[in-house]
Image (cartoon, rainbow over all chains, first blue to last red):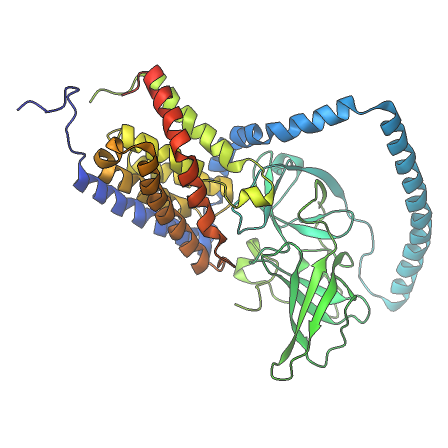
Length: 307
Length: 162
């Protein structure tokens, strides 16, 4: 029998075939998501897909790269000279501070030697990485950087900027890596209060300007303005880097813990360049055993306490 | 059904690639909230125009690539876009004859289904949306649909894809 359509196509789409296909796709999706969420066996597939879309991400980033190039190229000589002077002054200032730091580091090492402590205070090896201006899912705080496995990047390496901890690498491709920021809902990092050494976790809230410290007791000594630094526990982040500053402390006697919120010191939503810390983080001092890392440590430094 | 010409094939793949790039384009946050699901829109167009070529499987594979690009769980957007493709193929004969503004309403429904599936999975995995702004992208998609439709139709006619 002749088809009604002149182009020899069946008039009605094969609906049953479509629903069977939808069913198969749904089952495949659920299976993939379960495996991706529970275990991390899909890194190879993700890497293949991420590599295949790399040209598209470069295309998406092109307008920003062009604007950057134009501003750099057409910037006036006076502006460049002014910036040069400013940077030179800043370097002088930082070098002066560094002199003091070198003396302090030597003294610290000598004192720790006397105490037979094994904490390593040496500086870490770092790599400068630039952000690639592409957007991810708006509910996940992730960034893409232009360093990959060929530059020595590995999953879990911490990222810092000039003000503090930014995040850690979650997926590493050949030339790019994606990193999860410390404010991501799935992220938590072991921290301590700089003033008195109280240890806690800094859990992401999904908002760029806020971290939560979920397990500070109601009678804990914590005040607005306290600096929060990494504790080095968990073995992911090196100790002593600034993370956040306490902005809000609410004591509620009906709850076991105080509600403590802190603002990240790093400019998470405006950062353009980051430093990737390459070295393996040495085990924290032998005296205190690091918290055992959970199975999911590929993605987060420590499990969020609220789940 | 004969296989598509190479030129037609390139057009279909090219528009999908462009949509993917637009989906990753860095936007200021206030605009980002309304960013339409470009891949979804292009998928609706092709599934409507060529329901025998662009089908549920196409949507699924596109979704998988989107998942890698967006950093979501593998399979999340795949499920959403497979559903979009299914709905479009199911209703393509009706949508085809609607005027563009009326098509936009159907597109809104399809994109809402997609978005709700994605947000639902986000919620299950601990990324519950904090507010109702997740309803904005489908509305953005509805608003740009007439323009997308006319552009794509002209492209399809120029390259004689059928």
